[in-house]
Image (tube, rainbow, N blue to C red):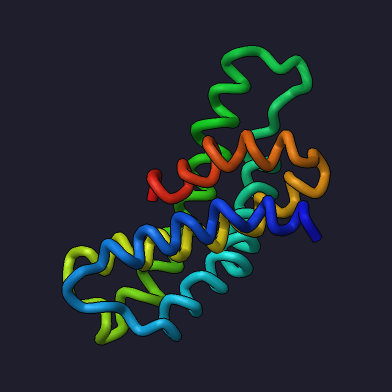
Length: 148
């Protein structure tokens, strides 16, 4: 249970921080929750499918050269993860009436990203323990919120 809390805590902190920054027109909590859940479930599914497609189209050998690591990091991992989050924001949040000011894009993108980060973080922290939780709290989780 403590590992789960360690995995979720940085996600909640970022969500609360961004929610407080929305000064003019608060977003409906229901739509924020829907965005988070879609980020946690649907974007993970989209990312997994895209990973499998890339494995077929761009098979990387096991020699782990710097070039292959670069290709995997930027063209496989980064593009698929960010694309999957974009799809959720574009087709779930953006068509809603509540999406009506520039900060809304940030709000919903962060919610989707934090859903994705929560799921990913839970898996990493359960396997890696508290050290991974602390490391990811200051690296991967804020990166997901920032890179959308």
